[in-house]
Image 1 (cartoon, one colour):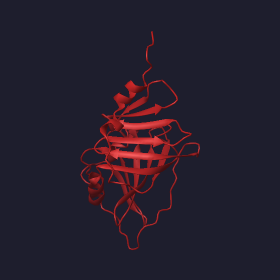
Image 2 (cartoon, rainbow, N blue to C red):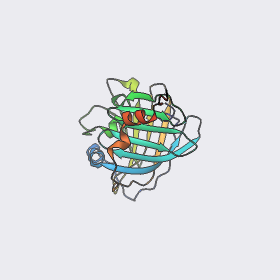
Image 3 (cartoon, one colour):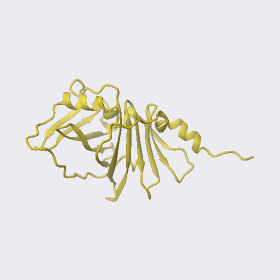
Image 4 (cartoon, rainbow, N blue to C red):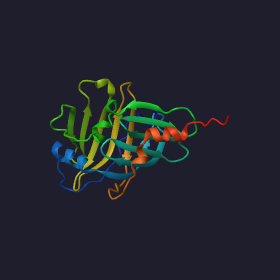
Length: 201
């Protein structure tokens, strides 16, 4: 899952003076308040190369990572699964149950980090509040480390650790939460059908 997992890269992020550690309730409220949103992202890959693109989110359960050229990948979450498409290939996409990926922490219908036993670390460095979460019953699914700034609350980056020791860091640009996103943008089965080879016989 190259476009989901890669080595950690901590970006410097400015934050207002006198910021305080965000509570799990504040973070949960923020995540639940995201309905449709879009942001540019920069991703650090396993080989230390950099990928860029646009992230689209439509909660609950839907996300779309559109990678800029020369990458030929499109990652989609929708319909309870995550699929990784290679735009240069006619092969079916790699697919994984969404609940078995750390992205589920962000995309589930009702985020309540305080009541769930998924949070394994909740820290603050004076600038950034960090929450590390994983499925306690299935740690082999990996974990996600979310980085937030305050005033207003904003998700700035995350680091995904997979069960095989790989990491992916995604640093986010400014969020646009005014966008209207069509459901078809997250329809994995529809895209599979559009990409399926035709029989000309």
